[in-house]
Amino acid sequence: MAVAPPPHFFFFTTMPPPPPTAVSPTQDDLKRMAAHRAVDYVKSGMVLGLGTGSTAVHAIRRIGDLLRRGELSSIVGIPTSKQTEEQATEAGIPLSDLECHPSVDLAIDGVDEVDPHMNLVKGRGGSLLREKMIEGTCERFVVIVDESKLVDCIGGSRLAMPVEVIPFCCNYTLERLQRLFVDLGCTAELRIEKGKPFETDNGNYIVNLYFERDIGDLNDASDRILRLPGVVEHGMFLGMATTLIVAGKLGVTVKEKLELAS
Image 1 (cartoon, rainbow, N blue to C red):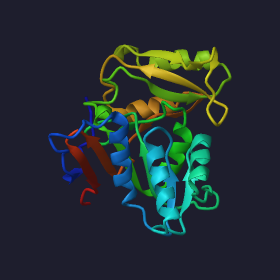
Image 2: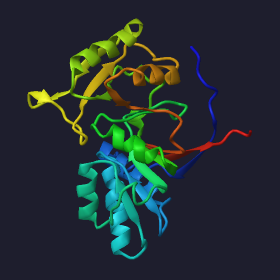
Image 3: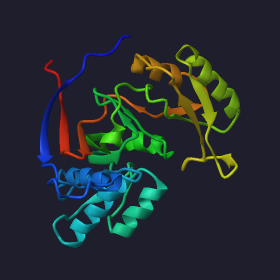
Image 4: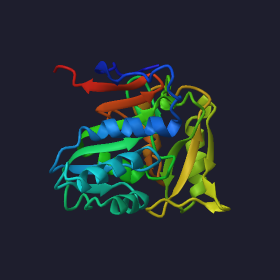
């Protein structure tokens, strides 16, 4: 299996474990802990990429609280979905887009999976295209997860790896995606909700790929998927994360990605 050499990392724990008498935190508590730690990176005057999902919403609410209290100011948020736009508006965060602010200082988002090299799977909520556009242009991309999202390898969890496709001949595209990875025991399924294909904010469909084995060379898999006509984008976010914040029952751990010396 050809895998690029991992970047250098350092670790440090930012929150101590709870005392023995404390009630064990719920998964939502862990998400909130990670999100609040991520907001420590936010400074006044920043343009922020605002992620989508049950973890990212805690960061959005925290930023809104800090704005109301005057601890942050002159923040501009760029939402990664219509859902996030509604949540950020409710939180009182001023919003814009990439056309007005093509340079993003910091993005905060949750993920569906993260491997030891900080490669990610995102998009099970259906917002992968806008997430990748915004988070791919930011100077710092902070990923927030609870420890259940940690995996040994992308593809080994047998959970969905989403691919956004155009509606035209979507079943044809689905079959071609499945054939790409037949040697990995791949199964492709069109995402259905309420009896009809799920539509993204962009009016496209989602094909979920399920792998029985490690995908292997992720960059090669990415290229093969994106070469298929009908495919818009996939949910592998490779080499994009700069900071990983993991909340677990023993506390919050931060993992920073350091650039390799040239």
